[in-house]
Length: 293
Length: 236
Image (cartoon, helix red, strand yellow):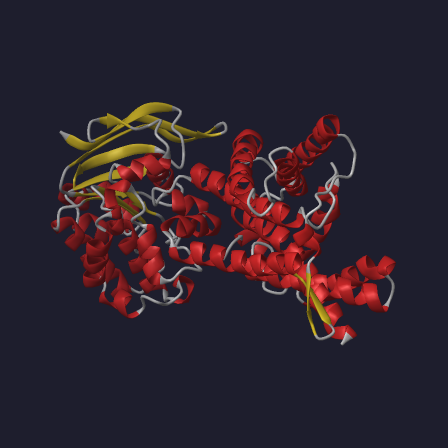
């Protein structure tokens, strides 16, 4: 029974990782830019959710209506202001730009919001439903279900809609897509927006569960990078699966070994997977070249 | 009036001049061939017309509109459509999805279903393969799909870059037949080919490109008869 509880906790934690990773892998798969400021976009969305609660008195689940479109706009802005001028630049330049953005955002947050740890006190976040010996946290269940729902919805969007197909086309062959009359800049902008909106959803949903502070992004995003590479760069299903796997490993090793060792354990598993499948669990060989399938 | 008018266009790769003072005119309705050996600048010219490359001098006028500074995707919406060399399909999309990608412009979006029917009629094999992933098709089928995808954009001028390259002779025949048919149905064609004989035979006009310059032009039958063309490109 303890094992089952630990597994459930792991899956729920994995939902958090997956939700954060989905946007990262979408942006990478299409725009081919590794966004090192992804964690800071998470941080901004958590602060947005926090202030919606503390200033406007909005329930964090309700304020998603503001936070998600807001983060879409933040993503569009980052893409047009920071990424667009260096769209065709070497990748190290793009890395410097996004790392630079991350440093700037962290320090701006320090100036405006101070380094204090803030959280919101929501009775709902502490509610646990008991089924026999198993306790299920409702707010974590919501994160878990959202991760699966978002992965599915984004997949549907990419598979079925004209816009989604244009996103895939740009990822597979940018010049050929231009010859089809597709405007790459518009598609990149929208993709960055969607990826950021997804992490906005993550930020809003985890705000009742975690503290927010200026460098909170780094705490989550390191894991998100592991998840994205483990699942296969640019692969939605891979990100979901990778997130859940890392969550379960995290939870199992934290309980049975030592909480201090859990990062070591998942990095060992990570290395092991890469040893046998260098392109990640769901990734195809050459995905870093090809992007989103 | 000409459908496409290229006036003194030059293109540079760094210091290297790829096209020098190229002028060319295409009237509505016919098939015009652009022939020349490897490295003569044919693909550069077609990519400049499509907007994938910028010209350093000169002007390009399409349907009375200067387009040399227009981004590639907007040119497609005017009906200037390129079918690139090596097909450049979307490898992980199905045949049907590839065709749909050709109709994402304002110009062609509403005609999507009609145009799919037309393409399937032109290349019946594609309707059998419609759910198949593009990179599992044979070379000839992929070429047909690339042409079909170009037709989905409702082109006024269809530019084909080496449509016959690397195909078995029997498939080449089929492709050339299809191109002639597309033209008969009202689309003007600019055909860039290494197979000088086959392409001039279905063309009304021809241009010969050598080292980035137009060295010869005229009605296709005259070029076919010219000593120089026969010697240089047909080994006769």
